[in-house]
Length: 243
Image 1 (cartoon, rainbow, N blue to C red):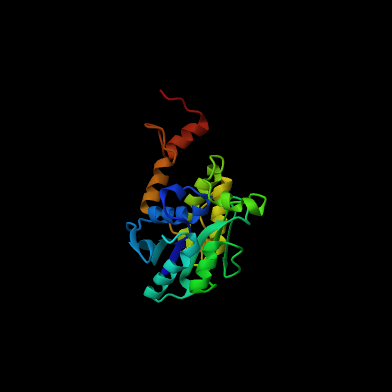
Image 2 (image 1 turned 90 degrees about the vertical axis):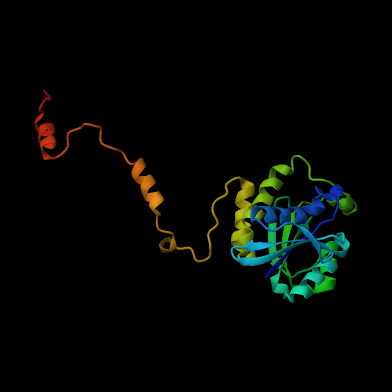
């Protein structure tokens, strides 16, 4: 089972904050893949479902960002999970807006949610860093992350969140490269189907009966009443006129 944690702060006043992009991402995953309703558990909100057959638990801690690790630790203990099974989505000011990077382990870079997670569960969980950009000065970081995304930012944010949701099965199976590729294409407006690791020209699915029927229906047809067969070809060859 995979535990996918989105970081953010609870409450309607924070719902559209840049700091809540992790919450936005797991909300979109739940909706796109038909997960169950959100319910209270593990000091947070959870939703259960599957991504390409892999059982997954989505978690939004209700402990506020600074205590995110408490909720995560409860869920991990309950399901006896390893950190290899934990994925965390969160805002990253040290990445340009719309950029996404995936890595396992690493530093916390001043992010209070990561600090709490690392102190409660360890450091080697998978991180999905969603770039929101830096305000330019350290003194502006707090107000920057706690402000709503602007209207201009929605132009890249909305397709990015949608792509994170649709590509979540790739993330669940550990295909970080194709996951990031899908997101980059989505934001650039040139989204294409994901290529799975084992895809080869010979492994592609054979055309279905419906595809064959559609192809046949689209093929050019003879003009109704037109003469066919060998005599028709002789007439054409010698220029015979119809009487």
